Length: 413
Image 1 (cartoon, rainbow, N blue to C red):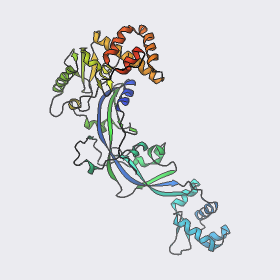
Image 2 (cartoon, one colour; image 1 turned 30 degrees about the vertical axis):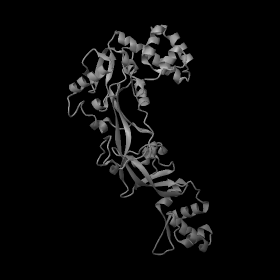
Image 3 (cartoon, one colour; image 1 turned 30 degrees about the horizontal axis):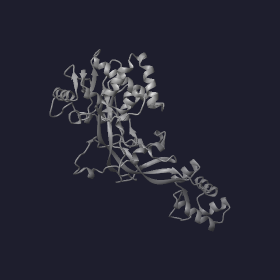
Image 4 (cartoon, rainbow, N blue to C red; image 1 turned 90 degrees about the vertical axis):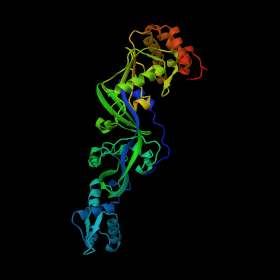
């Protein structure tokens, strides 16, 4: 199984944006190592080469009880001395079995019966596959191009991401091809008709680097694992919740962590309206009364921090920053209702929304953005000069270009 040496970067920001756009909220995001089982299975599959008509006739006669080579010669009308090499070849391919006692009698094999059934020669081949180390499920074919880590490679490493704990035993029930609608999607050829079993002593535990995302959708918690290529979205939350320890565990209480986080937010220039609370998932939530100018130009994962702040009109986008404090958990920030700060956030999120819409339409030139913002500002309750001040405050090239209708020379923060 070929492996690249350098995996491409997992685009976490775009993934979280998509989740937020669907009305979900992030609970937890962390780099982790996903356990997989690399093993070899024996597969029966239809050959792409056409079986000859004469060979097909021989198999059918043998399956009907014409077993001796002289009888086969008689019913086919083919000389016995010329027939014998063909019979031996079919036996060598596993389609017939030659009786050792007589050496002149042949019986149909299981592969021969399947060949007759499917109208194409059925072969047995060995194939390397990847199984989920938690469930035994066949993994998507995209994951085969990702460099896999051997457990021995983790010894002595300076940094090891969280390990998702594999099960000590996994079921092989997922190897039933009748349960797989799209065989190619799990790196099994379309011609495969059966997985006979796992080759003894071929299983090797491996790890694939991924990003774990837990998010809340309409009150339900979902988990998805994202890789540099492909994703796994069918795990139960319980499979990975072992990583989700209480906030601050084991050295601090959740309230202590909230207090430390509050100080960090103040350093960002935020004015807190409250001391912070925990939501139903045990993640911190803060309500903001205002912010210093420096906050509006600060970014996290390439996006303005202000775009993560929720208002009465916009959902908060939970932030998975502060890894030393949150260890993968996310913090939600909300502006105080009716405050000037809420208006500031509304303006910035309005500009961002227009930019995003025109980008999707491939119309996000500075001129068209400026026209759209000017036209839509009044109907959304904004004055254009207020939008201009908000954009300049961000020190963001895209925002400033959109407002001014021309390319900006301002250096991004």
